[in-house]
Length: 364
Ligand SMILES: NC(=O)c1ccc[n+]([C@@H]2O[C@H](COP(=O)([O-])OP(=O)(O)OC[C@H]3O[C@@H](n4cnc5c(N)ncnc54)[C@H](O)[C@@H]3O)[C@@H](O)[C@H]2O)c1
Image (cartoon, rainbow, N blue to C red; front, side, top):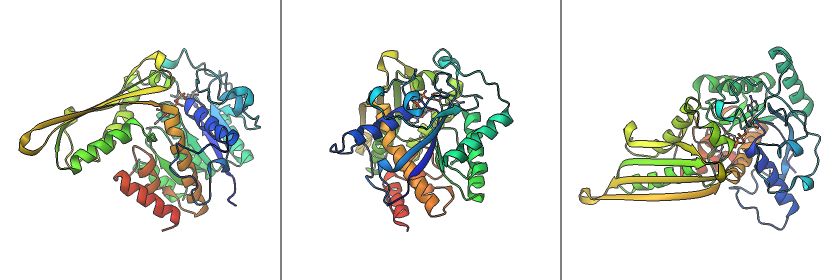
């Protein structure tokens, strides 16, 4: 029987709430088929082999609380398993440095703790928590645009020999300099920017690849996303969105035989509609030409719970990080990153990435 996988969480928002509640949902409903996950078992590890041993956040209503309560605190809005039947845990939420974590649009939603600690004190405390809890993998679900906070946590991984799963588009696993540091220390790193299970990016890149592979010429394409949670509210701040746009656009461009000019492709989060909550709507259009230069176009509307969409994927990422740790493999884990993340260090097609990932799990 495989050992438990000990995971520390950074950014206890809606994504983690959905991840933890989903695992508990299946625990309480054992006869329920596990949907929303690509692999039931990976090298022997199932969804119930993960222990969330500690969390880190800045919200004054989350820091100091046990994880089983913090995941329900505002502005989180996932409520699939009611708080009163969520089992209690000793795992607590600790303070993370604020740095650039909270953008201007979410300032009235997240009330950051007024820290009394110096950077050195906070860094020492974080390291001690990781040591005491035995965390072996840090998973980051920070807000988009948290480049400095992400760098802080990547550095913590390097200094504490902890694997890193980076679910956001602040580039670490796909950045040559950071990737080299993880390689040199032989610490696994999977990133960057998680793909949804059936999310906007995977649908768009799959259809774009289909049109390209079938020999048509794509002339223009767009993808617009709207949602009503703090993730979308935060993304109203254009300055925080630079890497998100790169990540999402490159994910589609990488699937085309011929790159589109920059002004012929638009991919990005586009607005915040409060009443949508965690529902994300994606509108996608592809325009192209077929035989005899005859035009065609297609439009897709996807409606999906964004949090259910990422949880199954991050569970695979956590287990793949653990497999890498078990086998002493460090640096960016390329098959896992290409398969599960929008902006890996090396883009491949999703079919190639899946095959490569399965070979990696099989030990090839
Ligand atoms: N399908 C998906 O949901 C999906 C897909 C790809 C990427 N992502 C990304 O995952 C991230 C998390 O999404 P979410 O919906 O959980 O966001 P969220 O806004 O619900 O949660 C973010 C959390 O980070 C905390 N935080 C802010 N600054 C911090 C700091 N300095 N240190 C530690 N914690 C800090 C906030 O208090 C909040 O609890 C976002 O960047 C999002 O774009 C999500």
